[in-house]
Image (cartoon, rainbow over all chains, first blue to last red; front, side, top):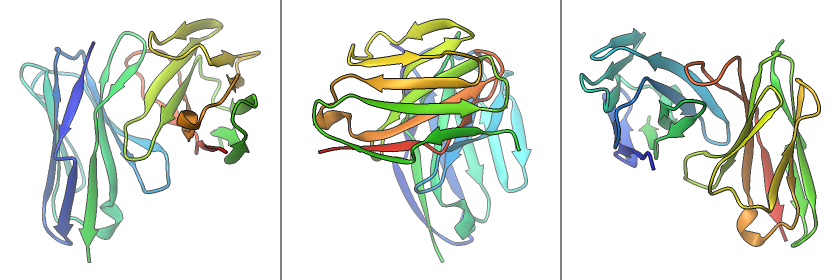
Length: 109
Length: 113
């Protein structure tokens, strides 16, 4: 079956440092979504990437979709304590999402 | 505000005692999903409804059932909860399957004693 892996599993950064999580799929994805889940919270949609090589920015967050549409990345510039949480990529299937394994980000003040 | 509501937020049940979790939405979305999320893991899709059409994931145990009596409500029934079923159960909605983003409810944390 379809598998979506993320690395790293955990990341601790000092506030102000950058952070990147990588997402890799075993199969080509039609598109990919990113979600953020705060500790004790529920996943919240961040963005969707559709086109090969697409790059989108949301303030300090930069999302990329690979040329082969099998990988994606999320980069956060100058992390803040409000960035803490687990970031999930999710490959979009015909009718559902295949969530990646997630990267838990801790930001040390 | 339009939203996805789950009740109760916390549920304790005994081993083998049936339990029902509920989800309602004011978004008027066609698709509703039920996910199981265990600690430090990704949400795992159990099943989803596209309107009234029920779609079960292949590896969802028979112990888990679902009902969607109308567009707004969806229920998750666990017929005989085991200790391994203790988890957060997330309901999500989407205006359409596939490309659309999913809107998650706050979840119900199930404890099995």
